[in-house]
Length: 398
Ligand SMILES: Cc1cc2nc3c(=O)[nH]c(=O)nc-3n(C[C@H](O)[C@H](O)[C@H](O)COP(=O)(O)OP(=O)(O)OC[C@H]3O[C@@H](n4cnc5c(N)ncnc54)[C@H](O)[C@@H]3O)c2cc1C
Image (cartoon, rainbow, N blue to C red; front, side, top):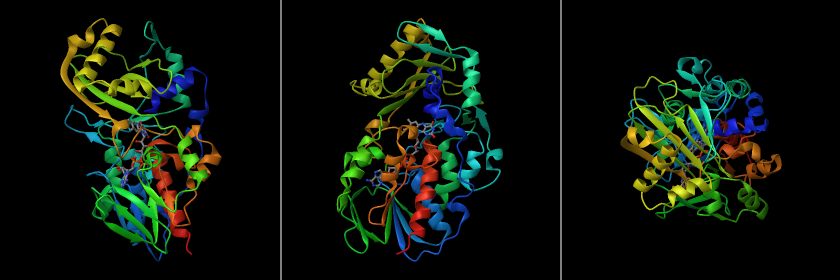
């Protein structure tokens, strides 16, 4: 969740992240083009990038299959519609841009006007350094929003946006429970092997697994990727993270409390901010070592007790008093097919991104937020890179 992070960036005077919001988006994408491609394709991963690429293949009658490791699509986009009286994003939650970006991503003009969105213009934000609880001036919050406009879905989620515009159109081609363990591109066709030993063949392959999964080397590439490519992958920061939701009888907390951490981020935030909600749900988003400190605890109960104790210090015991005993914890860093949270694209140099984007032998391509040349990062970055990579794949005929 970059919104809170961006606040810090603004407060410390760094404008690099926000400046990408105004960066030029493509006038058209692969969704606006048509392709004559005489071959078949395997997409590895059914997250935002893989699903976006799959829609292009579907619309152009290209033979393809999507191999997904888990039993569901969405990847780092998941939602919970039962926990509260509004849908909750378990992964990506913020639209780090103006609403019109949804038109570009979906390939449909005016889509953004049909979705209820909430401007994420904060009014009540504090910083907590373990001792001092300090209000962030309204002028800083206003400055942040005008410089870096963010939005949230009001009655829906990032997951449902991607489901509606991509997943539903390609669901019949997704083979779930199929973790890929090997990609062999040493012969004329590319051979992809799954954990169960099934072998799939195609002319070209698009790999959309997270950079955390690539770093873990759980997928064997034959021949091996070059040292330059491996070094580029290893150089991308991809922090572990935890997202938690706790239900309270009363919202005793402000819009956001940003906690000081040396690496990554840690924040308590009102997840129901400006939504049509009766329920009071506090979100906790933590990445880096602070997240690992939580996941190292012996049980979920211990994690929640620790969070409540921290909140009680800040809010004079109001957390324990108001806690309704309901929580949900998502340990993204511990999910074997994610292994982290997100890539802050602006931290990746142009040269590294170019190396990462280089296909293997013109047949194995890559997509995901780190590859996005428009540096949108997050979900938009993943979708745009999926569209970009499939465009390249379909155009690069032998
Ligand atoms: C807690 C959290 C908060 C976030 N907040 C925001 C936010 O507010 N706004 C925003 O825009 N972005 C946010 N992001 C980032 C955003 O979720 C991602 O950038 C985006 O969803 C990534 O999509 P992807 O398709 O590139 O990768 P993924 O979603 O990781 O998809 C990859 C897919 O590949 C599958 N896979 C992995 N290994 C294999 C294998 N071996 N074989 C087959 N399949 C495999 C995975 O199961 C997964 O389905 C957040 C992420 C997290 C975790």
